[in-house]
Length: 81
Image (cartoon, rainbow, N blue to C red; front, side):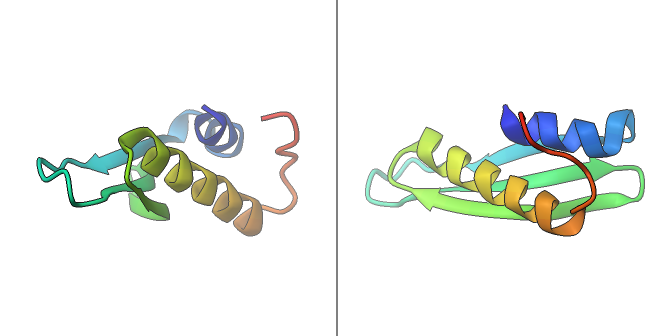
């Protein structure tokens, strides 16, 4: 949720933040997830994560996405998201 809020604060309605999970049917493989910002000008990968559990992989990718947004938009106040 924080990734969504941060991206919406920066981009408004011009871009849509998503976290995409690579599905796996193999219990031995780790889950992979990507945080992306989708807009008319393209699809930007802003964070990645992998973990044994699906939700953990999503959380790691979203956290990496927030950190990327903070590094690229340092003048935007992202406190409280």
